[in-house]
Length: 218
Image (cartoon, rainbow, N blue to C red):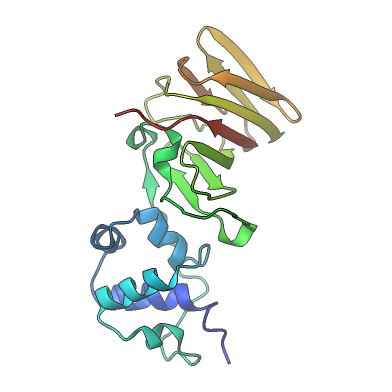
């Protein structure tokens, strides 16, 4: 007997495709981000009960169908995964990247992190999701040749950033200062200074990043 929770994501995806709805359209109708829907369908995030009811209502199926132990649909393990790629320019601040949470305690394991993949070759993985919107705690990955945004232009926003390099190497440009961060190196700076990052090497860069006080002022 299959674990109904384990196959929840593939079931949702299959039902969505049979309904003729794109991932982006489902996200639009549910008023969530496409990356949030993708995380659920790929098994990296478990939806709340309220979200499941919203999915079922939108897809026109009873919510019980989503939890059936025996699923007649074919679930292929080598099916191409839909990855929603976004532009860093979509976010005024890093805090705009994630769906809001009301959690006071957030425990996250590698299998259910929220992941954002950018068109510039950068990945952000959220390491905790609390109601403190002005704080971002995440793992960042820069593939070889990846940079902060597609244009290569510096970014600036409110708050402060702190980073610790786990592996690989990255070039950090902060104002007129150019630094190379490699394993064990750390950095902290005022995010209102124009800044950008670029992986000029042949190996992925991975680091832990903490961005504080980055709520946009409207």
